[in-house]
Image 1 (cartoon, rainbow, N blue to C red):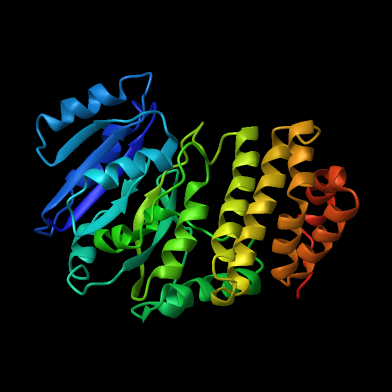
Image 2: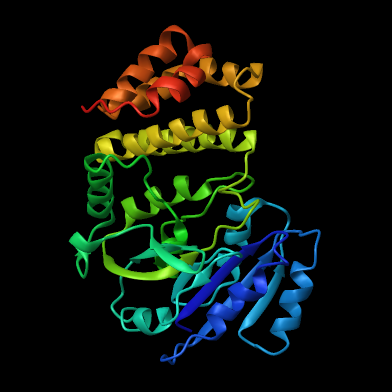
Length: 333
């Protein structure tokens, strides 16, 4: 089997059928593929809808998850997958028409990963989210790919590095041999997962084709306001920091920039949730201050250096200072 598509789903009765339709209506290919939906203990009809569709589509398999979050559900799907390549798709997004035809041509070369682009669907129009035009068609190491993305992000003054696992195909044997899995029970699990995968990947094919469509679902993880997202981003920082410490000589500035971005995400999410005065959050900043400051300093990026100073002197003021004044400050290294 060539491809396993893994879809974590939680309370997505309104969207899951359309997501699956975007997969089953693919034309111009002869891929041998399977679709694995992991229903993460939904309280609605998500699982029932999937089983109804599976009755007419034998490629579809429905698993019962344990409410372990997107990362835990994806891990379960990976454990059951049989395909040479893995594609993680979200339960409210779509595979672009013709995506299988494009990818089939590339899945015979043994790449560890294939990177491609995505677009937002806004009022029926596709608005490109990412572009790899300067790397299109190249085969690079995952480290080189990350360096290019991070450099471009800083150069163009973008505030986000996109770690979305949905815009990659991963070779299953590569993931298993490197023992690469996602953190369960947290949001933003791919911000912790994708950098580790790319740092281990020796052959990454880069495509500039838009093969994945993101639908702006109200109440989705990305668009919801939830203070847990603030705490989970700090978990991402600590896990990546521990990962880097296993062999500090092997890693360079780009991973510290990614960790710094996750740290900033945390400050934004906790601010939006109006939970920045919570003792638990301030205690986390104080308890792990040394880790967070090392991350910010080693990014060697001007704004992050200033944040490290604030964190050292008055950690309780970092969240409001960042969101009111530092968030849009452009200080280079």
